[in-house]
Length: 225
Image 1 (cartoon, rainbow, N blue to C red):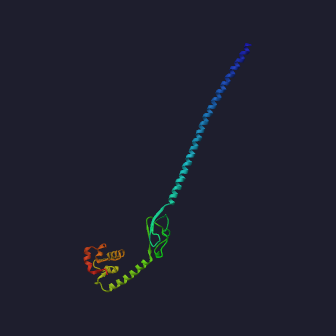
Image 2: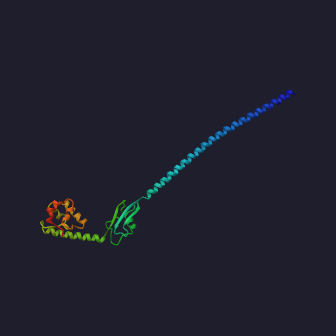
Image 3: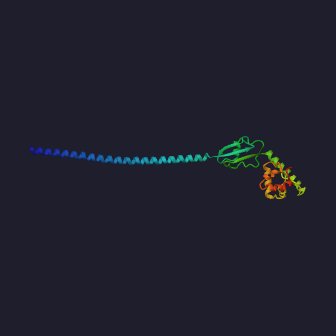
């Protein structure tokens, strides 16, 4: 009987030992699996964050490219238009606009506008000024040049020693004045065209290359009427 009890006790002890070993094994396995799962989870999270970062960078790059393209398309030029248009003023137009666009922006041409010398297809340049001339003024200038030419021919016929009208004389006639060469003759013509002629003979001293000494030499050989 005692032997049987010892055997039963030994079996119970062995069973309890087996149970404890099994519990310890499962706890260890569970802990190892949990740690591995955590590591895998962090790896997945890091990969997800990296992908999201790349997406954000790509989105920002696309937005910047879009903004740059928009800024390029919205570039403006500042131009002024004067003369025979209905609304002469300074205008802001898109880069790449042409003279015709500017004329339309200014309300169109007036009835007296002369565009024979205007290239309406010309591309506008920033800060430039476009002038539309008056056809009546152009015609008047043509008549004046014709009259001046006729008067100049008459002056030549009067002889080289005659007094020369510096308001009407041609370049060749002015060149014959003592001390006045071809270059100075051109400057005299440029001055009178810009200033509507000489008011008196002293005004010729305002022309480059003509000083007091030169004026004293030629004052008796020139006139303004």
